[in-house]
Image (cartoon, rainbow, N blue to C red; front, top):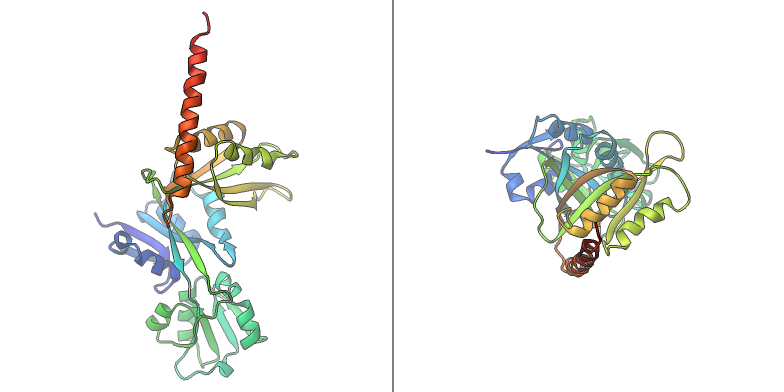
Length: 310
């Protein structure tokens, strides 16, 4: 059956480009949706089978609306199925015939604008910045606007789709610009050996060393963290939770043991175990070695416990 795949639209977004890089997703019925929260809601309520949303950018960091929706609002059965990493090239797009000197306002998604702060300050100082839900929506708005005084920070695909010209290419401030996207759906993907596990840990109580105690659960088992970020829990000042990504799959004994210990002491929301976008053997070798040591130690303890007299 052809899956229905929701993504941050309209057509021409970086999210669509990330989706199209995955042959199985590209072959599905694609459903563009206007906002990240609505994209996640579509798969959560069964309107689509899968959803693709941005979660992290190399320059600007996490996409907070994605983190907060997954961490606080989404159904716990909605899990990350895989991640997709896309190299990002931002372009200033305007109506045909417009010149850079004509531009009085720039439209784009706030996350995209933030990636071009230095370029805008240098080339278009004092320009008005107008927020849009996505880079493609920004291109749509510019295409529909009267006159040629507006430009969009958008994709080359969106410029083509909406009849705009690229006034300036690669306007991002840092050349090594990548965005990480996640595919959301139901169920757990099988272990591949190159996996990542994501959780949210809510502290049971705020006390000195509580974060250190959480991190020691991973360190004691040689489970490497790939991301650690605190976010407010929306329950008042000073209340924070931790979004954690680590190497490995919940099928790995060490990762399962970490989660077991965390769950026994804190409120933990599991976001998924899924294939990473790029493969690497170092983490897998380290987990195998640590896992073998853990199994030997477990067998030793079991043997000792078997000797206890009734």
